[in-house]
Length: 338
Ligand SMILES: Nc1ncnc2c1ncn2[C@@H]1O[C@H](COP(=O)(O)OP(=O)(O)O)[C@@H](O)[C@H]1O
Ligand SMILES: [Mg+2]
Image (cartoon, rainbow, N blue to C red):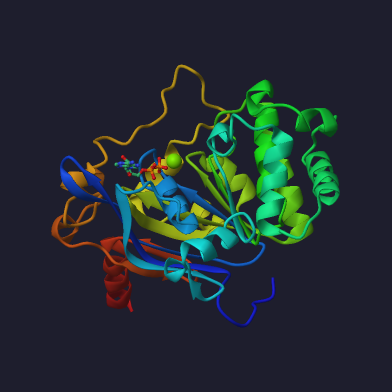
C-alpha cells in the first residue's frame, strides 16, 4: 500500500474515558492511542471489560450520558479533532463518515418502525435532497447488496419479525448505505452461529474491497483477528498493552499478556478433555487500579519496577509497540552484549 501524505484517516491520541460510579470516578479507558489508515482493517482485542466498546463509543461520541465523559486525549479524523465538533457536526459524521455496528442489532434498530422507514430516515439525514422514490430505490438496492432476498417484503417488516442474521444484515446495510470511510464493528458476529458469522464477515470485507473503507473490528476472538485484520491493538484493563501488524503479533508477541492470550486460543488438536490455559489471577477492578503495570500481579516476568511504575508504550521493532518494562530491560541487555 502506498503511504499517503497528510494525516492518517484516524488517530486516537491518549484517550481517557471516566465513569461516575458509586465508588467515585473511575477511568475505564486510560491513555489509549492508535492509528488507522484508509482501507486498513484494525483489530482491537482483549478480555471482556477491558474497554473496547467504551473506546468505540468514544469515537462516535456516543458514550452513555451523563455517567461518562472523555477526560483527555484527541480523536483526529483526517486531522480534525472530533472532540471539538458540535452535536450537529457530529451527527453528520456518524453514519456518513464513521458508522458502527453492534453485537446486538436491536441496539441500532428502532423496534417501532419498519425496516423500510428506518433506512429511508438514514438517507434523509445525510441526503436531505433525496426524493421518496429515490430513497426507496436506494434502500432496495442496499438490502440486495447485503444479501437480503425479497427486499421489498423485508422493508415492510419490523425488526423483531426478522431472524438474528437478517437483522444483522439490515444493520450492516444501514451502516454502509452512505459508504462511510470507517466502519466500527463491535463484536459483530458474537451472537450469531458459525455459518452466519462467516457470511457476515464476508459481507463486510466485500464492501471494504469495493469501497476502500477502513474497518475497526472489535472482538475477544483472536482467531477472527488473525484471519481478517492487518493490524491489531491488544487492550488490558483500559490500556493498550501491545500493538503490531497481525503477522508480527501472532509470530513475535512481546507483551507477557499477549503471549498468555495467544496460548488460550483453542488449537485444532485440542480435545474437550484438555482445558484451555487460563491466566491465573484477576483483572484489577477499575476503582483499585495499581499505579504500575496493570498486568504485573499476573505476570511471570514482572520486574520490581512493574509494581510501582506505569510502563510507557515503547517501540519493540518497526511498527511494533508494547507497554512493558521488559522492552527497556531487553534493550539494556542488548546494549550490554554489544
Ligand atoms: N455505563 C457504565 N457505567 C459504569 N461503568 C461502565 C459502564 N459501561 C462500561 N463500564 C465499565 O467500563 C469498562 C469497559 O467496558 P467495555 O468497554 O464495555 O468493555 P469491553 O467492550 O472490552 O468488554 C468496564 O469495566 C465496565 O464495567
Ligand atoms: Mg464490548
